[in-house]
Length: 303
Ligand code: IPE
Ligand code: IPE
Ligand code: MG
Ligand code: MG
Ligand code: MG
Image 1 (cartoon, rainbow, N blue to C red):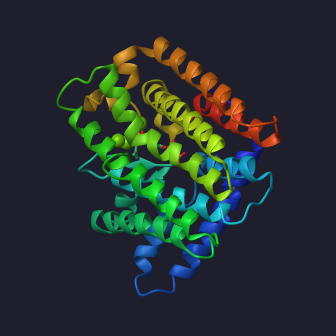
Image 2: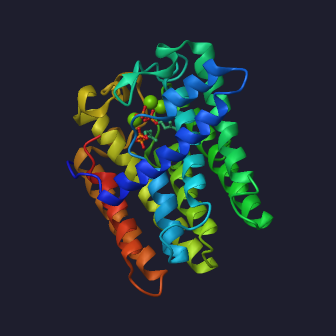
């Protein structure tokens, strides 16, 4: 578990962060600068930007263009939604984690009330960015993006999965329940990232279905890696507390499968993800290669 991030992912992280900086600079002129500061604090400075990379990679794969219109804004939207989920995940009422991305968590750097509001505002900002008429001239594409993000992050997706994650602290989940919970809390947003990239890049139905299946496998593999890292890595490397899943009694893949089986499963999932995506495109391109590198990185990462 020590692969470095693909260079293209680092470049895409920089692109996305430039867009986010512009967005927060614009918002800083509003009447609640402290809220914008907390949003910026949580959304910037760190993060692997995997969801952004998936958006941009899928958009390029679909369009064949290096800079498809609107794709960077979609990437920024998904990173805002993700940053919101992390702020709330770290709150004392949830995982009670004092660090995130190597810095004090948002509620420590600011205060709990500000952190709750920063999460709320990042969530609605994510939808604002997708509904923005400048992102794409076709209202059908924009509403598809909004619909997908809503279902991925709401009760059938991330928020519902987070509820199950808390429930798992009080009773033991079996493997199937763990899979469902992880698929909702983490997998849904990862899947929506790839699909959104496909949508903004003009993917046909076959490619959209391929992207969805690719990212479903990848999302599960990604959370397996997160669970393994929670057990095996340390807070300095991760930039967030480790070892907490076991003490909190969380349902984790490591807990229900053991490290070896979980590692094998993650590799199998990534292999399948790459195979499915390759089968859904006509030709192998540099962007297919990028998507393959992202999925390998999702389980080979060191943090
Ligand atoms: C952490 O996500 C939360 C989970 C869904 C497991 P990431 O590992 O993608 O966090 P950052 O964005 O790189 O900090
Ligand atoms: C959180 O899962 C997933 C979210 C929806 C934020 P974890 O609680 O395992 O994420 P980390 O380990 O704190 O990043
Ligand atoms: Mg959690
Ligand atoms: Mg957590
Ligand atoms: Mg975790």
